Length: 152
Length: 152
DNA sequence: TATTGTTATACTCTATAACTATA
DNA sequence: TATAGTTATAGAGTATAACAATA
Image (cartoon, rainbow over all chains, first blue to last red; front, side):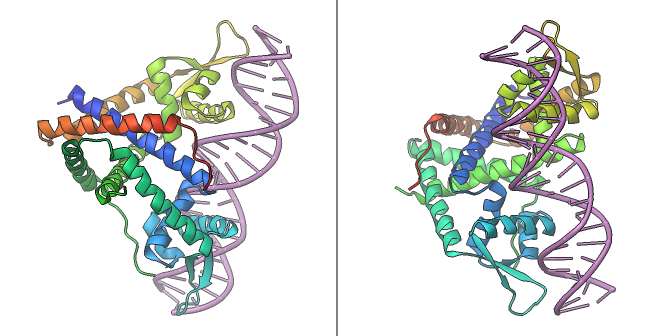
């Protein structure tokens, strides 16, 4: 097939991904966070206290990696480790007051960012754009799986 | 403002960025490449032989980092270092035969991927989707260039 | 015997700073 | 004095493997 317009559209999508990544990383850096640690903070913020094991599954990384990320977040005061109430092998990772505050701040920032991105787009075009996104996501999801966070 | 539909659309864009990143990284891994090394390989493939200095500017990383990336690519046979013809301090990084073959292979793969993503999208929707992408990119390009927000 | 999280080890990506050879 | 690339050092993120405590 090899449609030049398809390649041009993919180039735009890749540029979009790169720009969003740059913007997000910069914002996180200002909060004292890295992308990987934020990913974990976000998972705990949305789902509540979780074991290392559950987080390793949710982030699709090794359990050893979770230890390092939690070490960093704990050192900087974003999360705390607590013993699991019923399984003495396991640890529960939960947000500190500071971690919860940063999590809510990030949620608010995301709303502001979303409005900034789309506020000036004509409504019809916005609707078409979202439908196009869903089409592309449907194709991609069939190729790749997305992990879920099991219960702690 | 805080339009829930804007937030939902941003969620889709973020998922799209994550899925594409996963897919790309997986493909590169099968070729024996990492994202950072591929970035350098891609730059050399498109622009031709370049000094470390030029590559550091192009990839927006430190000169030290270029040394490491070129070390890895050279060890694996994708690029070669040659002395600069007129500046004896400088090195020129160029693709080996294998590097050039992989570069062209990646270009072909990208066309296949682009067709896969968009082939089933109705033409009108595809056109609207691309216009929406351009709108969002325009906002982001001005946003990335603008000064950082001070801590609140 | 299986699972949870850790220590041990190693590789990649990234940065700054000091050093060398050249310009 | 300035530039190009390197070595030295450090930290983050990632992996596998071995291990201790517990299930």
